[in-house]
Length: 181
Image (cartoon, rainbow, N blue to C red; front, side):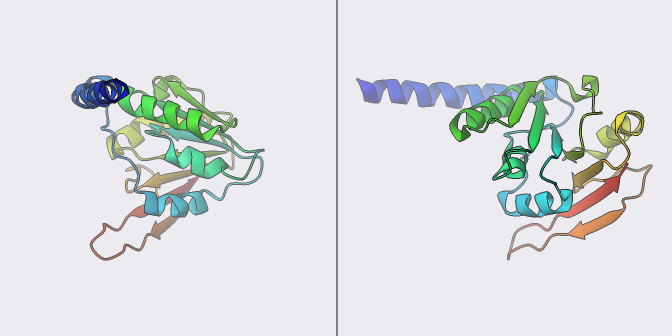
């Protein structure tokens, strides 16, 4: 009987995944493409987080950058915002199982979020979205806020630093763009 419940649960989750995958473009301007686990450490290094940092991840997906950013640092806090249902659910499940108290995941539109508390921001968004966000960043971010973007850069602002990641064999190289506001 338990086996039947497990099969039903797996089938339900698979259908939910397919359903939300096809509906994600209706809820979000960008698809859910997770950052590869192998470059998360390089992203965290590029962020140069401090013990009391406040990290925001816009379009946080499953939250992997958030959890890596606060790991072993109880005074750091992290806020992820996600608009697509499936990645949001994945991030919430990850939070439950990680028992991390200093990570918050919210469902919503990052264009409506106040960025002023952030000391560090991570984004993995298309250039058109970056350019839409640039005026909001320039208005709301405190001086000294560090923003790290994976693979995409602003068309109207030059990065302060460019970091090329090193791939293993067949894997794709990535470029990390660092901005200071």
